[in-house]
Image (cartoon, rainbow, N blue to C red; front, top):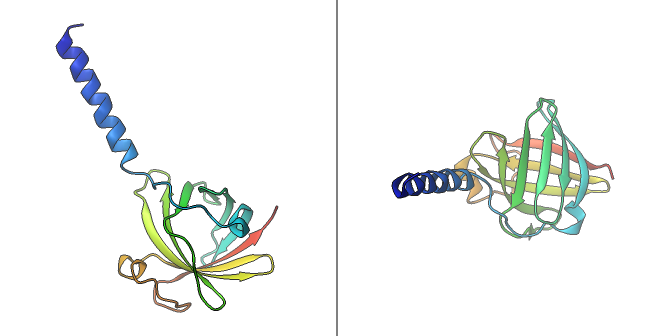
Length: 142
């Protein structure tokens, strides 16, 4: 191997590393203790998910076989009986998505109203009935 080949291999490896690390959710702020643990989630469309949250990130496995991760991008904002939750979600082989949710805690988990539309994520309306909103029922299992 000559010096040119070694330099070329190094640059290719660097390019691959930048490409891979550029398309994942960054580590954000820590999740609060009441959001850490094992949860089942049910979406309005019938999709189910098992979620495991640590202080730093969440691992998600959907009933359709997809997997993903979640990180909290900013601290929770407390409202009267809800929280505003900003997260980055990345489903396997897809680009990361910024989302904003209204979380309404209950005795065994919370109901999450997810805003996915980019124009809503930045303002994160305190709405539980906006168009395109996804409702998710989350229950603690352990």
